[in-house]
Image (spheres, rainbow, N blue to C red):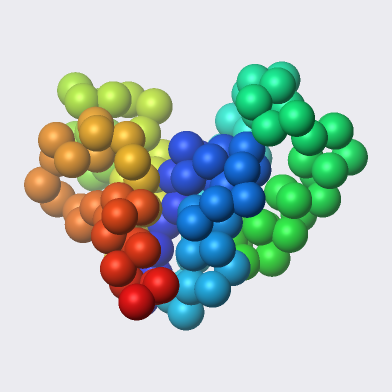
Length: 137
């Protein structure tokens, strides 16, 4: 199965060596994230560094390790899905439109703990709890 990984999941895996990080590494599903996720990580790197006590170098090492398991989807590959994604998510959280578009492109589910995704009914959402049951049975 294809699963789109939301930025909050990657941030969680960066902050702490936790079940989230284990799921990413051990998951047999194909994990993807839109390229914007990397920009969001960079934008929030100071918060990640302060919460994790990681050095900048270690943060980059862990991120690069995670990106071995989460394939990046370039913007041009999902641009045709933006209009439909906008109809689904624009009134709920316009910032999540790109993740819905990635989901539509990959015919996937989204892994996120963001409650805004739960408010739509067009795409399947997995929370971390769902993923624990799925991957770490």
